[in-house]
Amino acid sequence: MEVALVLWLLFGIAAAAIASSKGRSGCAWFAMGVLLGPFGLLVALLPSSEQKNQAKAREDGVAGEFRKCPHCAESIRREATKCRYCQSEVEPV
Image (cartoon, rainbow, N blue to C red):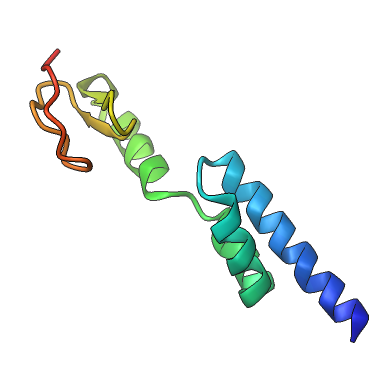
């Protein structure tokens, strides 16, 4: 029983470390890792939607068409005047 508890805590710690390295919430992913065990760890290893969007932009050759929102740091189009994530007004580049 004690070994299983330690193992599940290690899943939580590993999920939190992986998520933090990807810019995600470490605390939330620790809880997910503890609750879901190895499945939480596997989900933490999956690429985030932001990473998928950036990879797709590189494949399509439009990586230069995006920039980071100065308010929330999400990727938005260069010509955008309003961030679609945080709804802040931004200056087009």
